[in-house]
Image (cartoon, rainbow, N blue to C red; front, top):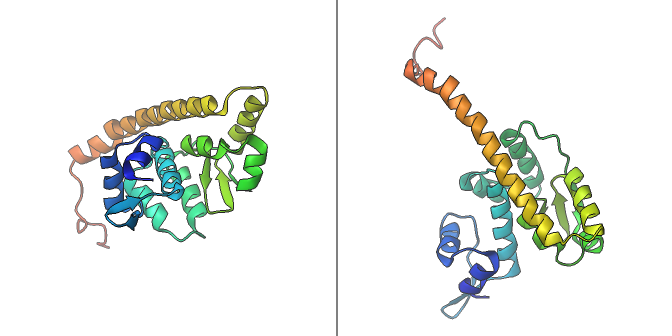
Length: 195
C-alpha cells in the first residue's frame, strides 16, 4: 500500500508517518521505483506505537523499546509499564496469534493492538498486556458486544487513566520538584563527595 493508503487505514497523516520514520520509530518502506510500498508490518507497528502512546509512553522511550533485541522486548515493556504505572497490578502473558484468532475472531488482533490490550511480538506470538481485562473483553464479546466498540471504550478508559496519572505528576512537580529548584539545585561538586 502507498503512504496515503496506510495513513487512511491507521487514521494518521502521511506527514506524521514520515516523521515517525525520520525519528526511527518506523522502518522505511520497500521501494518500487519512486514509490514507497508499506506492508501490514508497518500498520502493526503504527498500532503498537499508538497503543503505547495512549498508555503515556513518550516517543523516545518507544523508539528505544523497539531498538532492543526481540528477546528483551517483553522485559523492557514490563519494566516501562511498572515505571509509568506504579499502581499497575496486571499480569501479562504470551499467546499464539492463531489461538487469539480462534478465541475472538480474525479481526481481533487489530482491534486489541489498537487499544493496547495486546502487542504483536512476531509472526507467531502476541503479548496480552492485561490478562484480567482480556478475560473481561472475551466475556463481553461472547455476549455479543462488537469487539471494535469494546476496544474503542478501552482506549477512552486508557486516556482517562493517563489524565489521572498526570494529576499526580503535576502534584509532584508543584510540591517536590518546584520547591527543590527554587531552593537551588546543588551542583555535583557541592559536598556530595566531601568526607
